[in-house]
Structures are given as structure tokens and as C-alpha cells.
Length: 282
Image (cartoon, rainbow, N blue to C red; front, side, top):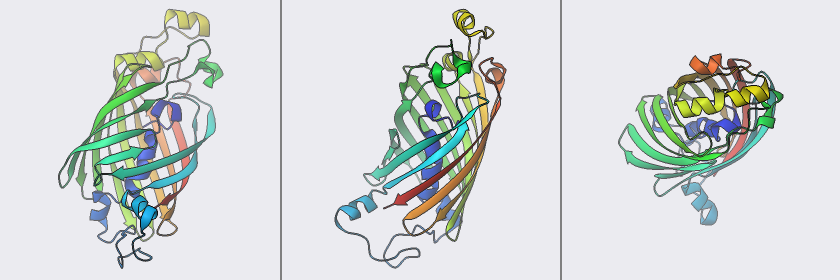
């Protein structure tokens, strides 16, 4: 999972929202999670709110803001700080989910298995994001449509996701991984690993260098083919300061692989990043 905001369309925020939603995996790890919200339950400060606040409570609305310190583009050796706001909510008995820049709908849910469809955005890449990209041209933003399947094994969630991008690279990507979450008092500890595959169109757009681009940029011509483009490892800690307020910190390192790692567009194949968020859960 890339932390670069433009390339991921805020996908990274899912790693923030999933543990805070007190998923089945987390509940299995702790039968009395800190997020229990029924009157008189652990972690509850009083009766359920009414009126508009009660509706926000029922919708599991979360708002917040934070910052990410990470590579300027996927493969960059230079880093920057990017401010990131986010809003999420769930509707219709927790089947429809509003995400920071998209919507997902649960099509099938069993005790441990879930399948969803989702729509969102991919932000592409601008050649003026960094001097190293000059002459490569812009990769336009585009919409995405995909499917997600997840399975819970106690505190571990296994997840696979495939997305088709419309516009921009016009490519297909797939991410497969696992995340472990554990409740300990007012803390949520999580760790995850994932691998991302991309088809030829995506790889040529982000990592290939055509003869014209080579003449303009000075980079060597390069034909990038389909394959796994990166592996990511992440760890995070979320602190529930109160029943509603939370603070989350996360560190991640990505390793570009295959044709992505060999691309002349890539300055550094190891891609570390850190992020910090403060949020409010209604």
C-alpha cells in the first residue's frame, strides 16, 4: 500500500478506519472493546445521544485531520509533508460506507467473510511534483471501480482487493495482505503486510519511459511489464483519549519490486513513511 497521497487516492486511510470501527477481528481479540457504545457498557460515558448527534452516532461518523511525511512520488528519494483531512460514515445497517474519496457497498456478509464493491479515485501524477519527473508528462486523475473480499481469523483480517482505473493509467491493480489488531485498554495495536500487483498499462504509465519521454527527460528508455510492484509492512498505535477522541500514529515501509524497482523513474526502491492523525468518532 503506497502512502503517496496522489497515487493511492487516500487508500491508506482505510488502515485508520478499520480498527476504529471495532471490526469483528478486534472484537474477537477483546470481548469488551473500548468502543462499546450501549448505555452502561464499558467505555460508555452515558446514554445514547439523541437528535442529529444520535443520527451521526448511528452512522458511525468519524472526522479528523493529520499529516503524512512520505515520498514526493512513488520511487522518489525526496520527502514532503502532506496535510490530510478525512471523513467516514456507514449507512443502511452498516452496508454502505462513505470513505474519504469514495464509496463501498457490502454485497455479501457472513460471520467472518465479506465481499464488497467500491468506487473511488486515483490522482495520477504531475511531472512538476519533482524535478526528476520533468519531461515525463502528467498522468491524469481517473475513477476506479473494484471489489474487495475479506476474511477474519480471530484478530487477523485477510484481505484482497482488485481495482480497474478509468482514465489516467487505465490500468488494473490488485492488493493482497493481512492485518493484525489487538485491543489493550485504551490502545489499539495493529500490524500489517501487503503486496500490490499491477497490469502492463499501469506499469507503463508510472514506471515506463517511452522514446519521446526519454528524449525530453534524459532518462533511459524503459518498457515496464505487469507484475508485483511493491510489498508493504506497517505498524500503528491508536490511543483513545476519550470515548470519542482518538490519536493514531503509523509507520510504514514499502519495497518496490520487479520492473518497478528497475525503472529509471525510481530513485529509491525503499519507501518509508510516517503519519499522525487526530479524530473524533460520534
